Length: 325
Image (cartoon, rainbow, N blue to C red; front, side, top):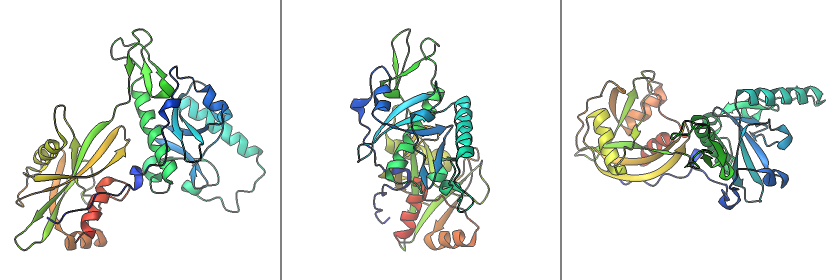
């Protein structure tokens, strides 16, 4: 197997924010940051408010009351940002306020209204759709606020007492007021593996799987969560065998990418398969197939196979292998 280069920090792995942890005030009160001119970033159930080619940065007056606020950090120019994770009523209130403001605005949007992220009017779009369009600062903010928003929604109650918790430390901790116990955001590590076989003539093949929940023509790399007490390398070996009954050797780490859907960190590996034998587990993986580079390129171009795009580390690993031939 030819050595593969490390995955470059593209898409969701890009970073442009100083998280500025010293300004995460202990009691969770962000008033001083608002007063200093912090800009809000709005999130609702994994979607972000965008307009005119990027995230919509408003001001504090736009923020509905009783929403979850998190200090996200500052950009290279020193501008500070607060992520606002909206509940359903909060989004409704914000949308109503934006609609009212548009009704008052005399600007003629019919000349170049745009659509999607380029819309002249604010629109809500999911992070996956935005990842490759945002700059480094904005994609950092988006990953933070979506990941933290997911965590806050799922951890509103104490696992010890069942009572409600409240945000502290700038929104990065939830505290149980009864016991004082602190609960921190979770990130679940998951391995994703580029499985390669090299035959006696030096021809490489990659093993791709079709998930049982996908359309039959959609293929990607095998992946799975790291279990307690397990190294990343052992997780690679175990997951590949569980899903494909393939024994792999020599796992090599190539890079990582946040995947806040809802709270994962994808850890990219390649590994060698000594033989071409396989057997799909048929529970999670419906089918498996080996491809040479030429076969995979032809299948993608011909439309018989849909492969992952560069928004995910799966696509980045796969295209790195295709380009490494």
